Image (tube, rainbow, N blue to C red):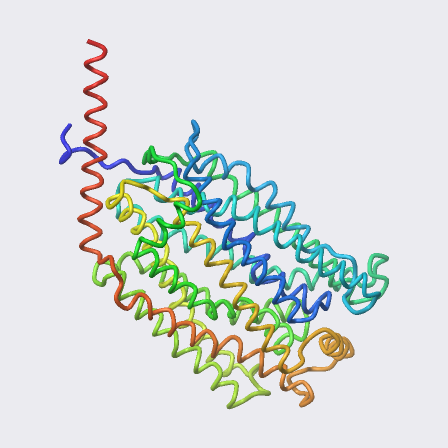
Length: 516
């Protein structure tokens, strides 16, 4: 069989859906932590805003080293299952344990001794760091295996586009329902012996039980991929150390541009971090049903926009280059986020009116479309950078390069949390003032109608609008002159497949000669 007629080796339909199911489960887990843990720390157990920011940002500093280390371990792994699958089979177990432990603690900050406060903070920091390490063990091989499942570039692009969609579905389900479920369970527990009439204790245990439920579902789905998916592209014979891989990452210009762009785009993560307190305090006033309703209405706009743009990305790539779609997709996102804050300034106390909700839904729809497009393209461009490295230097650093994507997701959360912590501290929306606001709501008050709390409402709208707009602008600076155009990548991929097929033919001929 010649190179011209040989069929490209690619995944089966069963493998495709096993992988996508695992992506959905993984994102269920990620959004339990990414969207709800900061809320739980700051607004439920009352850890000060800047302390929460420090916990999350310092954990991300460690991940700056931990992720490439894990990527190196994956790339050096050689087993009968491959280099990614062993981690996909076993990683969900520790991820489950630490996900649950992050929502356990020893009481409420500021309501006991200084030693107890220190213990609360230390436990929150330790469990969060351990969760990040466990999550990395599964996350890097889960994304890295996409570059090993197929030789066909079109199939890979389709898989990565669908991966973002299924990941968005999994993450969206936990984002839409985690907090309402936690609040609902908390309301039920308030008048039981567990909480003894204390709404704060009820809410605390509500988050723990909700986290347990979602962790069971997410980790069970996460594990499916490891048992079913096969790796089809052989690993490089060479094995490199951590320092060598850092050098590889930095010398690869396309990957370096993507990495810097992702870091500069960090403020967009405030949409996820500040969305929960925005819904809870401005729209729903901690009512579980209303929280679900407004998350579905407003977050639904975001997710619909994401899913539509993710689904359209493969078709758009037949007409536009990745570079143009990535850059202009980011710039288009500036418009809806700026307008969101303008809408708040026009009617700061009455955005629960149906017309206002519709306008905000539309703005979130277009903002979500920008997010969905750029998320898919980021994964595609990282996969292209892996091909570029193999073509240029004979190395295929799937694990290391996709560790960059994992690192970006975590670093973005850390940077966004610092921004939110600073913003909350400026208006004193922290610890004792949060307790005051919670008591006001428990007594039947509506914060958006009380002038005393207007700075808190303003800062919540500010965080989900202007910083994300700035992040979209900053993201295009490194990629405006992106180094790897689509035509060059197609030429590189064709040459790589030719090399691989030639090696297969040589190996078969050698086997025939040995048998003769």
